[in-house]
Length: 181
Image (cartoon, rainbow, N blue to C red; front, side):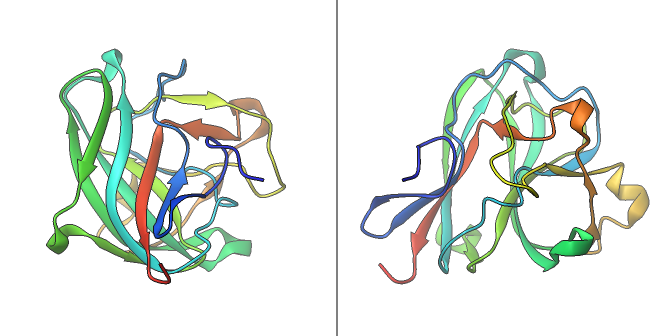
């Protein structure tokens, strides 16, 4: 059975949330210019469309731009993913925010897709270190992606190391309308 903060949830007949609960968390990323795939083992279980994002932003990173992203595994063994789509937001206030997407901004997703974030400066979305649920659940990252041709939609990521809280819950989830609903 899924718990709200640990896996994809079905909350209504055709609505799924992928990610973790958007609540206050104690940690902030200390790096700049990075892409993070939050938990590659937390995959979408059905095809659908991202219709909104629930995010909690923190005081330390106010007015920071962040891109909420969907990634598709190309070669999971090599940590290679294809960027499916993204939504750019600016964290202008502290606390919970819900961003409803207009039809033209919605992101079509498929079974197996995962979510991530790209922050060109500091990341305004906090996280909590958690025990890894499964092998392969460590977050993936790429620092300074613009030097690595950010315009390319396909990237190979590095795996979070055991000394840097490899498994994390970020205060972010995608609201997805299930195609089967």
